[in-house]
Image 1 (cartoon, rainbow, N blue to C red):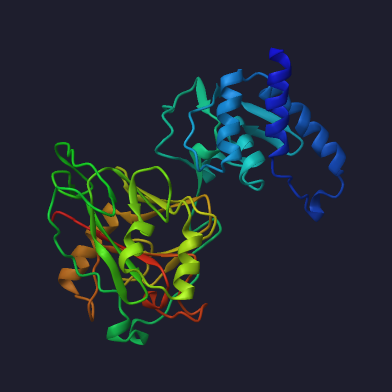
Image 2 (tube, rainbow, N blue to C red):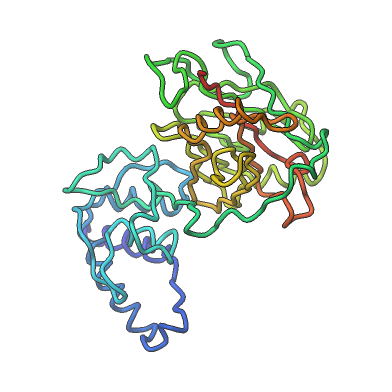
Length: 360
């Protein structure tokens, strides 16, 4: 009975895998031989998992990460497949998320994974990992446009407003339990950032101060903490068709996490998000780069050390026009720039402005 249940879980997991499409260079290796070798190797690993681990893995895979599941621990080591030796957690990510990922440095552990980096065990839950957006791997920054093309009314406001600290927020839940000290120049005694939600050129709802290290921004969920955009828009949001259609696609949205080296964004939705940050571009004093983050990708949207450099440049060579070196803009679903008909962020139906409270 127990064996049949275990086999049933393994079969359900195997049906959910993403079939890798062989390229022309791999034509010499037939699909049948490749799949047979992969099946024998990976199935042997799956069959070593205990029943609760299989159930945890199945919960994560079938919900596509919507349900935050536990860790799936396996001894550290590599598995030999038809195209080389691959770490186990990378193989699990290949099977159920990204068939074209092959190296561990392409992945970043998500904050809800509680497995400490070690030499004995590694977490193989594919939804405890995200894929990195870096300049050397797709998708790269794709769009630049001249600052002179922006009309004053088309610029993102980025005007820091200091909200009241503490109390309740009708648009979501947040806790205010600050720890001592500061991280990356952000004071932990106050909110480390403030969120402003926009629809085209109109801000919707009040500013949302963030005190916890992690904040979720999503359209609508029956559970979960963070900023619920549906609660914001139900009272005063736009009823324009393109705005409503875009809001429906936000889904699980994004997760922002404050870490030692900066602020990271993880795209949990099924559609790309587009990011403009002052620390994404090293070659320009004024950051004019928009980075596309596909579903499942992570990108460092704010770097503390680079931000300090921009603050020094701002004192010696102030930028023309209103510009906040501590603000990040994120557009849901729709991109902007020379590649699209939307030249400016204010032409996007649904976008978020992150205003960082940096201690100078």
